[in-house]
Amino acid sequence: QEAVRAVLKRYSPQLVELQMEVGDVGRRLSDAFAAPEFDAEQFRRLTAEAGMVRSRLDSLSAVMLVAEATVLTPQQRRKYAEVAPTIHNQPQPGPREGRPPPR
Image (cartoon, rainbow, N blue to C red):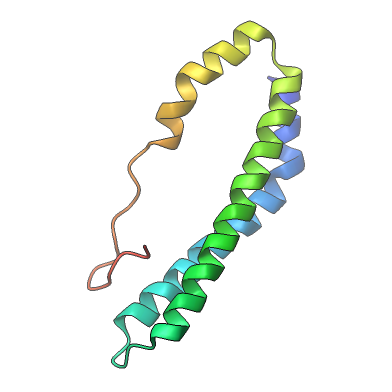
């Protein structure tokens, strides 16, 4: 567990930064969608930006999983694999009141 904590500590600043970027671009996407004058080109640009930020977050998650896998035993990796799908499929908070969802 200590080795996994070290991995999390090492990557936590990047992870938090990317999560904040995902939230920010999601809010901007929602704002663009809800704007009185819909700008399709702006919405497409923001959608592309959201995809790139999510891709960077996914890549960092993969790097973290590789780092964690190298310090876990085969038995620990099996246990993690059993639990991981439920971790990643937790319900996400709904859209803010009066606002469309970011996707």
